[in-house]
Length: 155
Image 1 (cartoon, rainbow, N blue to C red):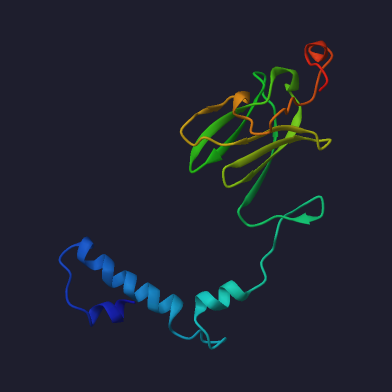
Image 2: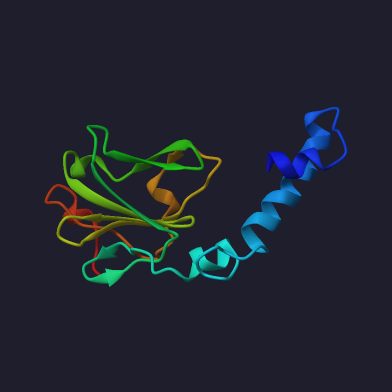
């Protein structure tokens, strides 16, 4: 890269240098042939088999993130989206319960160890706390506990 940049016109600032570096990087990764594979390095990298995480034997897409967590004393779990920490209300009856957070883009599912779906909602990136009212499953009530089971009528 240094040799290539020396052959270019002299830049007086970082802003002027940036386009030159971008051109070099694009050529280096996407146009020049890879020494061993005789194709551009980016194409060679994309064609390699990648390790894929699995959940219950099912491969997960690369965009899906899985996090194991415990529900805190306030009945919430946390996850990060774009470097921001979000708190997800799961309910105080679930305090201490081990859960699995599965996030695909903005779609979030909170599942307990037994596979029971506790939450399914679309993450609002602007909101710090994701209240249970954000659930997108119509009629989803979640697991009942003995203290509240009398409040839910069967449909």
